[in-house]
Length: 166
Image 1 (cartoon, rainbow, N blue to C red):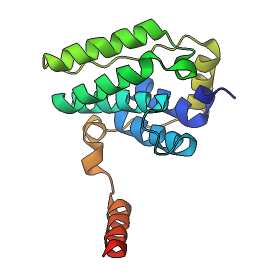
Image 2 (cartoon, helix red, strand yellow):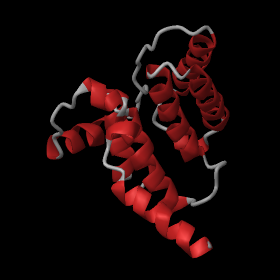
Image 3 (cartoon, rainbow, N blue to C red):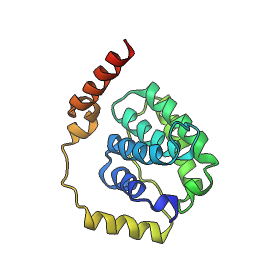
Image 4 (tube, rainbow, N blue to C red):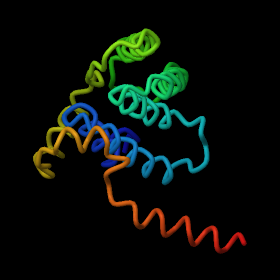
């Protein structure tokens, strides 16, 4: 299986293109990355994750965070090898360049879609969406998800780690 046909990457594309839920892109992208190349922060998959993080920050007017994320994403996806196959690569890099310029100039958030060219990938996305329909979410929740979600399990894990390190 091509690595971009993995169900988690398909979900990433749906979260990005259809739902504009960039926080969820980060979550599923990170799950996939941890299963493939844990701790390898230079892996091209991290470029996709950073692109989504850039969109999340930009939407929230966190221009410095968006800029850092887009610059890192562009560097990794420019020479992404098989990790950019099936996409209009020139358009992808153009979108990242435009994003960098927009956040540098403090322009308002402007969503876009990842340009998928592969018919197989388009069919996989459509099939996954049909099999896993998601109810629309509140735009305010999507925009501020990192602060509004239930974090009790994360907090608990941090507390356990602190106690072990004492």
